[in-house]
Image: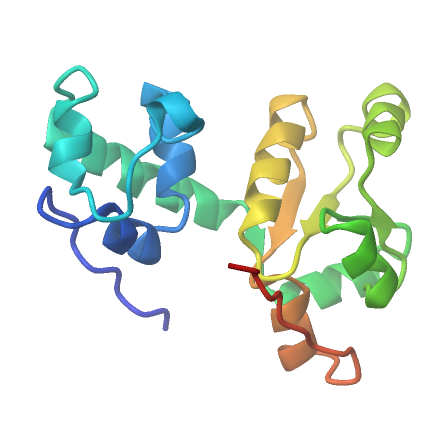
Length: 186
């Protein structure tokens, strides 16, 4: 059973909000245009109430409800590594798209995966079957949610993203796939 999510409140810092609800920034940007760019960004130490106040006095309870609804929606877009493996075995021609960098893709990838490029997006949107399943993945499962939402927004209603990304897949399904860590330079 998944861990219960902590309740949100206006006194939580944005860092705490994002740790508990990783899709919160995407949710706040989609509805209120908060946090998507430098002009509407926020600091990790700002509280949710402070962010709401300086953005047209958005009611904190409304923002919290939206973050929680979006989190549930994000969860519905994900497919577990085990369910993905079953789907892949049932559909050998499954469209599997890697949204990581070319370097990550070249280093380790899931069998049959194609690196998602602008050209490939154009090809899929022009000639792809919108009724067939599409699975997207990244390193840990966070970036692929944005890509999945983009595909769904363009009519590919059977799009899912791999929960936990290739990292979870290598832990739960295929331990022969090398795991890696992204080092961020200071």
